Image 1 (cartoon, rainbow, N blue to C red):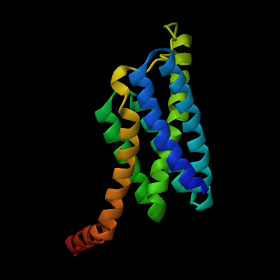
Image 2 (cartoon, rainbow, N blue to C red):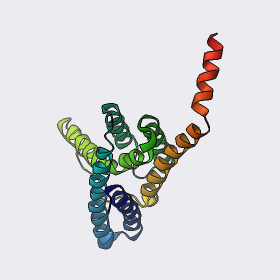
Image 3 (tube, rainbow, N blue to C red):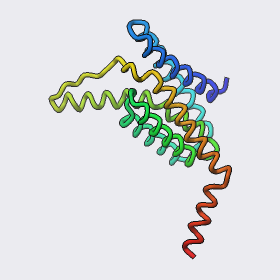
Image 4 (cartoon, rainbow, N blue to C red):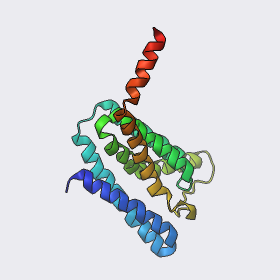
Length: 184
């Protein structure tokens, strides 16, 4: 199985399982959450292999890391609107810089979210601890977060698809032509 297919299927499965884990709650929910986390990390690895194979320029990697960092620090797992806006913009940005591989890179940003989100939570806890504040890390997701993971993925893909559609319609070229006509 190709890594992009495995990564895509695994990421979709992980987002659905984590949503189910939030709805179920309790011990079963924690078990499902752990399983979904492992699947999410496997998806990130497979999609990482896939994006590496398309031999992207360094700036594509930089934008992917930057976009993932922004959404990891800004998007809370319980905020559906912020998740849709943040990941939609991240997916669009990846489609702009990655061209024909924009959908793959949009998925990669979502796949990197969990490792970055965990890293951000640890960094925030360390900072709070060093500042003399409580350094607790929330381990149980809020119940409102059940649809956020799949919404993140759909928003990122939607943002990338909008850019692809706009490029196909020549929107970028027309905008550039209009700006050139204003200068003359």
